[in-house]
Length: 330
View 1 (tube, rainbow, N blue to C red):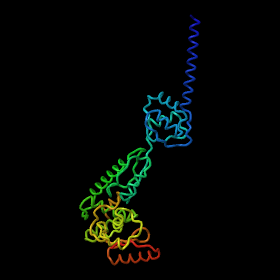
View 2 (view 1 turned 30 degrees about the vertical axis):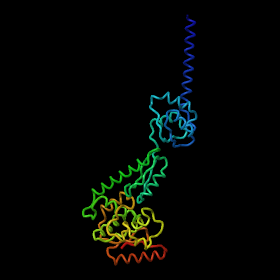
View 3 (view 1 turned 180 degrees about the vertical axis):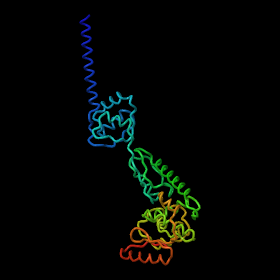
View 4 (view 1 turned 120 degrees about the vertical axis):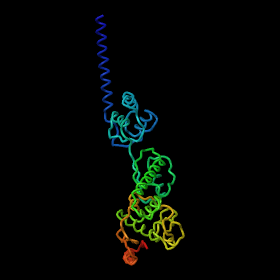
């Protein structure tokens, strides 16, 4: 009996030692550096542990799918594994890989819609966004707020477009609520239309409120806006003009031609940013009625036609030296 007990005790000791060795080896493999040579973003496929292991194997994040599956099962109490695009550090161990899959935030992508784009251009930006799915129909002109939007791999283009349209609706609502008194604008829609023109008129942010004041002063006096960007929009039927405006363009009978028609055009000509919306609802205090390019990227402003003509003469001299065409406001 005693001999049998001794043998049993010895067997138990051996089993404990073996189990300890196996456990130590398993822990060593669990925490050992993995094969990923450099940090990498990896799209982890949906479909359960095996599908996830396949994604990680193909990306070089793990060296053995069975070890990964075993480690995931052994640590299942720490939470489910998620499918998304994740950032994995270089030489990530199985322990680190599983922690990323369970707790890390998915990789955030950025899509920037610049100010002043037309609906067609915005559609192209969405179409070219990497990692997105689905199609987005061309939005209504001026309905999208230019901004940088975060998204994740696999997000729907249409959903992001709806976010951008909701952002514009909110920005316009805010700008209209904070508008100055006495503006010759009857509705938020009219503010949006004028903001789109201001957006396309200047690349100098500080000029927006003053250019808005010029157009608002003209509206109050019943003067035509004479905005070149509206004529270019008409000439391309909503596209982007790749040539200088011609006399025929300026004389064309078209609803968007603000040389021939008084008042605002029937719709926006581009997507204005929040700053342009503020510019038309909170314009500069100015009596200016004219502006013309000044040769430095900005504009020279004038209250009277006589002063404006002098500014035009200076710009004509600059254009003669440059050999290009002038941008004139009358």
